[in-house]
Length: 213
Image (tube, rainbow, N blue to C red; front, side, top):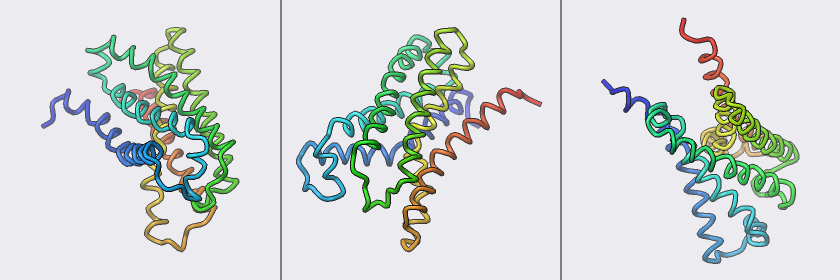
């Protein structure tokens, strides 16, 4: 039987596992940019303006990694100073992720080869704004010593930041059945990743608010 400490770390480990594929893909993109990979129609926008994508990838890697550790009750209790330090880092890092994501959505040419259409464009803007707002509300809550509200908003921000991890799974039907690829199906699969994460967080928050029965 798992000890309490080991069980407590299952959630952070699970979140890190979920982050593995998008983090790996991000690192691969950075290697391409750093070592001058062949410029294609798909990656030309990144070479034309690399700073936003570099900020987004590096920030996302740090946000997903440090944020996962914050979900451990044992870590928050026994390493309070480190927990607070991570929190101070996560808010500006998360804002860098959301703002760079918004910049790329608004100013990069759309990746038509990936079926990125106007619906997905709007969804990405809403997600970027939602993540930024969640982080700012989380900061405001902790400054007012409303720790429960702070945790709730930070969990929402993390859920949106981790959307790429869940999207690996929501895209499986498109890879299994390539004929399903379209702007609509792409938008649905992308939106599903963020929606599932937010739904899980809201379920956890509602369950904790109701308390044990």
